[in-house]
Length: 259
Image 1 (tube, rainbow, N blue to C red):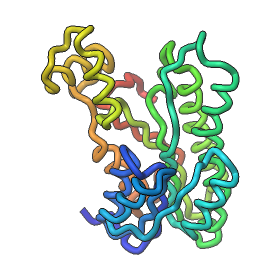
Image 2 (image 1 turned 180 degrees about the vertical axis):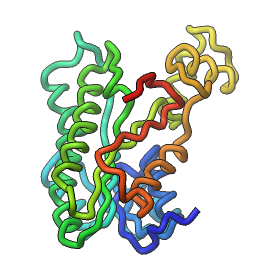
Image 3 (image 1 turned 90 degrees about the horizontal axis):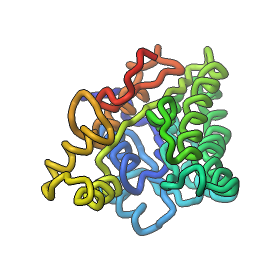
Image 4 (image 1 turned 120 degrees about the vertical axis):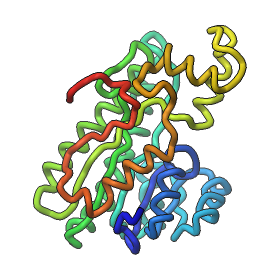
């Protein structure tokens, strides 16, 4: 497909692996000049080389210094995809206030840092796209990972607030909300817990059982990174110029809501 973004410069944060890498690959394949971001130089440069990226930006976005380094390396961008973030498996009795603060820095303030550094230039040029990668737990939280799910809700909220602030500028702000997506860490987790849950040993059995027991959805499987990337591709394209403050769910129907 031709998304009409050839020549646009895009920064995808956290694109040295997983969802971010898939998004970077799709945008590069569509002709965008993609800047690959990560904290591990070797892994980030490997992805950048494999997609003939326009550049590499290294830095920890949970710090001002790291955000400054990324902004300097990336230069002016037309498309900002805030994908970088962190998560763990702590519950209410385990997650300390310090854990909450660290998670908020990594998942929320990091995105704000990027908005502050790149959106003013988009305003001046009269065109731009900002996409937050959120998640279904933002609106349907579980008992576990309360600090993580709260940061997802904050990401969704800030994206809508930003959309209101960008009214009439030619710059849009939206959210892509993935469900359970088959990245390496998810496959490893499900494979490790499969024996105790009686899910079998073959991946096809494990995936189907996880989609039934853990993340029930209408499709009966986990999503693929490329499916999330496709939604991002739409939102950053000229075809989505009339989409503002929206959340596109890529979750197979996991979130059962009309909102």
